[in-house]
Length: 65
Image 1 (tube, rainbow, N blue to C red):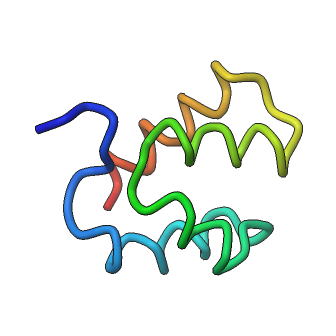
Image 2 (image 1 turned 135 degrees about the vertical axis):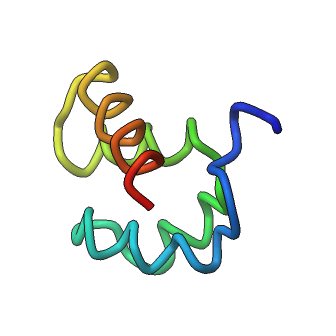
């Protein structure tokens, strides 16, 4: 698996991601298209988090889905 892609079907995970990070819009999530780095970047941008914190949240998200 390409480590830059979120595991599984992004269409399924998109709803879960929006529930977890409510400030991410449908448009944001459509542009991400399962790119892990794009998701990390959007979390940083929308929530003012450090890259490390955003990475940690995405790691937890991946483990929990």
